[in-house]
Image (cartoon, rainbow, N blue to C red; front, side, top):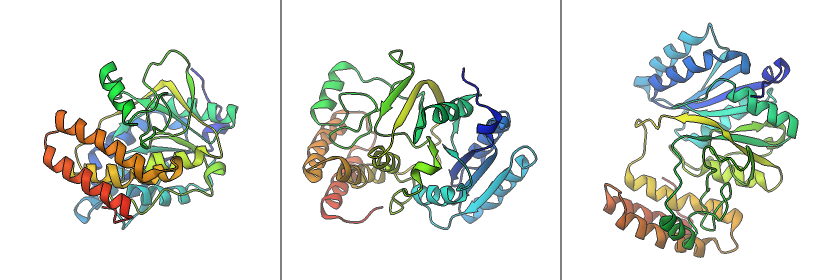
Length: 307
């Protein structure tokens, strides 16, 4: 494994946006405390409700002797907005590793990626997450027909969906991509003129694809398929089926506005495929999912509200 020099580590910050998940935050901070030599500071942006604020504060206090932690309060519950606040607080860093509050990087994960960032002089990099599964071939063909996955992993599809690099891809350890997952490392110098789309409320959805795809137009991005980030996929603060699929349509057109000459048409074509997928798939609340998908698509086409 690559091991970063102390000089790189001192220039690397961790940014965590959290809301109402003190137990998961504690697990992440415990893991980070075991690799504290790989970074110099942790910035936590908390949008928790009043009944959880004290628990989050106590959790941070428990680890303050092991980690240099700064707490930033956000009165707006928006993952995208919280990331923007956090990046502002990380302006003195060189590299910033963004982490969800329900993930856990293995040892050397952060220092390895920082080393690659410095050696290749790139704008952003990420590993992969363990829950990504390769679709079966017939389903993969279906998704390609409706533009819901790209022909090549690591690319944004015709319908605005980020197609992941799969864990353990042995063709190459480093892949050129044009989007990155939310838990990515960024060079502050290269993204100083960029912000996440703060209009996206709540857990956002597609804020990572939209942001990173814009950056990819002017700078290089990489994914290391040999670095796997454990994602626990916490149930707390997950949106309902209706809200999830509404956001899947409404927010995705912001990606298509970057990548497509005909964003509304490609959105509608992808939506047809998603209707088929939901109708014959394993969604538990199909009517709610379909209603959210349809209303989100109409809102996207009309430039309507985000929810």
